[in-house]
Each structure stands twice: as C-alpha cells, then as structure tokens.
Amino acid sequence: METVQHHFFTDMGVMVGRSMRHISRSLDTIVTVTIMPIAMMLLFVYVFGGAIRTGTDNYVNYLLPGILLMAIASGISYTAFRLFTDVQRGLFERFYTMPISRSALLWGHVITSLVSNAISVFVIILVALIMGFRSSAGVLPWLAVAGILALFTLALTWVAVIPGLSAKTIDGASAFSYPLIFLPFISSAFVPTASMPTVVRVFAENQPVTSIVEAIRALLSGQPVGHDIWIALAWCCGIMLVAGFFAMRAYKKRV
Image 1: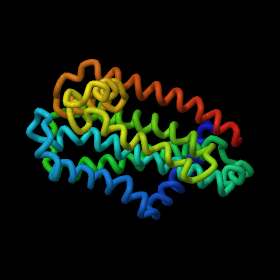
Image 2: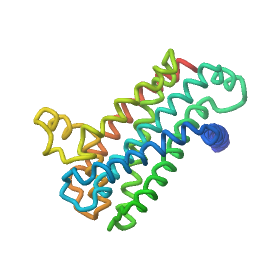
Image 3: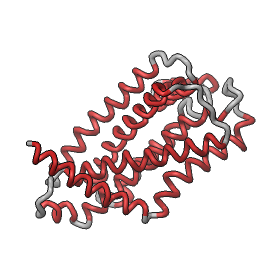
Image 4: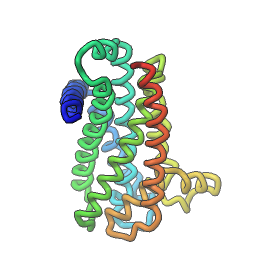
C-alpha cells in the first residue's frame, strides 16, 4: 500500500510540475488570471470608489474578497482548457500505456489549479496592500480565509474538470467560467445588497458568492463572522461534492 501511495504522489508531482511549466510559458494565462483582476481592482477603487457607498472609508478593504473570487473563477477556466488540450492530444491514452498511476494526471491538474490560484491570490493581496488594504485579523482568521479560498478553488476546479473532459470544442471547455466570473457583480462583492432592486437583492443575498465574500470580509476586518461562514462552507462543500461526482463519471469514461 505504501509503495502504491508513494508511486501515486511521485507521479502526481511530475504532472503538477509539467502543468506549472506550461503556465509559466503562457503569458496570456498570467495576464488574464492575475493582471485583469488587479486592473479591475484599480478601476473600482480609483475611478468608481468615490461614488460607491459601502459604509466604510477604505473601499479596497470592502472590495478585495470579491476580487479574489473573480481571480479564482478566471483561473479555473484554464484548468478546463489544459484538460481539454490533453484530451485532444491523446495524452490520457498515451499516459495509460506507461507505468504511472491512472489518476495522477487528473489530480495533477487539480493540484496545479490550487497552486496557480494561490499564487494569483498572493500577488493580488500584495497589490491591495500597496493600494491601502489593511487588516486587523490575526493568524487564525487569515488561516480561515486561506481555507475558504482553497475550498472555493477546489469546488470550482471540479466544476472545470467536467467540461474539460467532455467538451467538444475549446470554446465549450472554457465558456462555463464566464457566468462564474461575473457572478460577484450580482452579490455584495462591490456594493451592499441593500442598494439593489428587490428581485436582484433576493438573488444576490441567496447565491454562494455573497456568503463567501461576507465571511472573508468579516474575518479580515476582525468582525464576528456569524452564520455566513457556515453558509459559505456549505456552498463550497456542496458544489465540490456534486461537481466531483460528475467529474469522476466523466473521467471514468476516459479511462
């Protein structure tokens, strides 16, 4: 058993290294995943920030959680793209003829998504600090934020695996991410939901992004989190379980 596990982790490490090298060589990936959310943050803080009423003097503090979720949603579209590319090139079949763990290739993509999105989140937080972001949170709240973001990334990554393995075209593999990227706009990520029309407000207050944003915002500001964190965790776990089930079904069709 230990030998099998060691073999799996070794193979997965090789696959993660392969995927990370592809990312480092793809400038458009870096620009889209990191630069675009930063540009969005600059635009909202320095252009729109003065006209938006959030009840706080530091709009970048209010905005940052939503920007982080947008960056992750943008990043996981490349997971679907990379999977689709591997499928089209016949790499799955080629690797299956080699003495490597069959699940290592899929998990390599999943772990790559976690690592690459973590790097994007770190860079965006650094830029936010330069822009004036400040947090009174201690180590444990920051760890909780990291955990929520990792869980959110995993949940969306398993969503991305489904079209990545089953889409017929490259556009179909990545198009699923567009609604996810824009979902924060219909949430409390940029403005309080109280300012929205009734129908929009009801949707905004009952979709996953709002609870996740509110939980992260409370943790970073040192405020009581309340029930938002449990709703956020429930959404992330629920999405991950459902998407994981269908992702594994799609994967088994390739095995």
